[in-house]
Image (cartoon, rainbow, N blue to C red):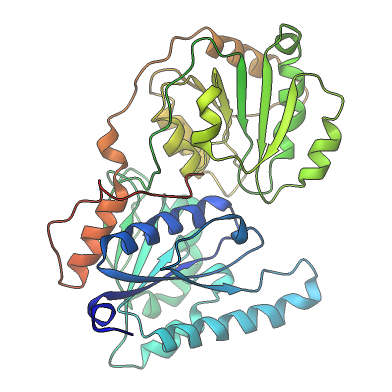
Length: 380
């Protein structure tokens, strides 16, 4: 390692990736920004089945953990291996900072072994928590409070929002600092003459839930030569979705199309309301119908959609009725009648710069930095 590299801040970014693609997209965006600054040597530590679909700069090293097995009998041994590999990787890297995404002790607490190891050490990296949304609503913090003494090893935390919003009132032993939304390039403006209805069904494994409602609610529109482009997430059964839509006219299914590219020819968007998807869509002028994914425990998309629903040209379908498609059909038709408008201040979406400044401050190497000149990739 040369002298210049030795002077840079070594950081390991842990991302569990199991619950959705958005987590790793956000992590990669942060790593790219840190690398581009010339102040950091970033490494990503992750495991999952869709990581290979994301391009990453050569200057970012990646440690891929084995994915969580579908077979029950294999899970214990795989998770034991992952926990041990994570500990040894961090020891070998000897980073200045370990930035941990969403879950304080990782997927199924696989970071506990690492925290226990460092709890008896005089010298340890600065553990930083990265919260994309309310830790309470995500269910991430509840289990972590069983290990309060290990939570105390965290130096601080970042919230990837422009302000601390209601719902973040969690009694953590470290402060949380808002740094802004982690977003990609600004999407193109709406095309007034387009007849394309764009659907983002989610980066995780819930794509199929939106398929039949979208087919039925757009039937009359497709007869009028509107076309539906249904974007399936990388964790979906793409071949199954293609089979189900093989004979549906003006309805096309594609896999893993970047948001900014897909928006280039869209009249309206019907979409889930995940962190990365929402942060891209609201910066466009295109009318949006949000259909947030939520269940008894995971409500972060619903809360986000309700907040964003206050903006211009955004409607929210809180519940997707699989039998009665009239409400979704009505929301789509209303969106098609709307005129595209600007709806947000772009400054709230410069979170990568906020992350950089915060981490430099944490390591006492803060400088006057700007990321405006840097080019970001992986804009999904």
